[in-house]
Length: 208
Length: 208
Image (tube, rainbow over all chains, first blue to last red; front, top):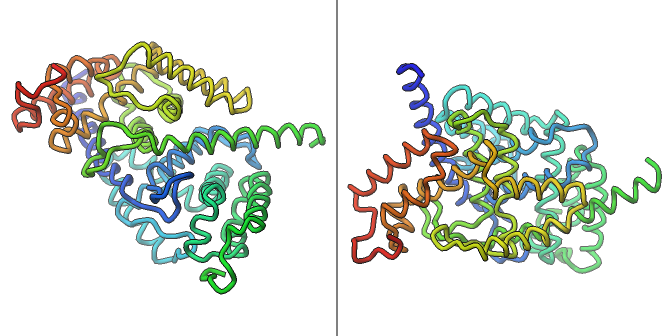
């Protein structure tokens, strides 16, 4: 390796490690949902891990042919801008927050060597746009997982934040775009949750 | 889709979701190391996420040509048996624990549909054997990350558990097999840590 190339690689290493250190902060970004069986809130790093593993075991249930590796990489990256923009409850999201997240992505991915930053921007934008088969499936998993946690936690955020069954169906409808089978499954779980009393009483509903 | 095939896919979905629920427990398996900047211990799920992202930004520093997607999948899976076998400090690992982990892998991956279970076993065994280019690089990251956390936490487990600089070099030597550049980097960080007093005094060393 020439000295010049070696220096270039050394610089790339330092840039990537600066990113690795900053990205670690995703472990302190707390979501509304709790992990299955735990009282504490889930952080966005462990959530991202769970989604990536879910992609690996559920990809055969995607509506379209997908590039699983791309879905996995997309899910690992999709929440990273929260390091600066924080997580926003799915029932509270605004256009303003999307702008904030895009700025955060610029700042965070900007730490990376250019050729890697470009890959991260591409994956993140593809997820946000939700148009490709991979993005549709990744987004389906991102919606499915908190519902699955809530169901297994006896109601979770549905009860804690006063979310009605109707609101759950409305906000999570994008699951169907990625996987009809996962959508039918979540509908069945939500109906079962209703009979089990995992939803708030009418007077406690804040998100109807 | 025929009714028979549909039932088969439905059964596969249920098996995979049983696994998704069980795998979630990795979020409560605590490691010795703390995440950068945090007091609490890191769990194996967020650790696995961090490693997978590290693979995405550091793959150009691997010694050999690697299939990055395989490294990412391997890292997402490599700690899963800890759900039943718990995490063991790198300085305390025994042959007995490896047997326990293999049994745990059988139990956990056994929840999955056979064709997916086979993929998980293969990835896990490849990581454990540490012989392929992908496994060597994945293992290098798995060793590099806690050292990087300790360095950025002012000593971390090195101080807390009385680990000498020599022990760090000895236990983390496998980093060199996966990435000479990462090995040189960690050596430089450990030497810098020594001058900064991030290692225990001689009389406090328990792992020498």
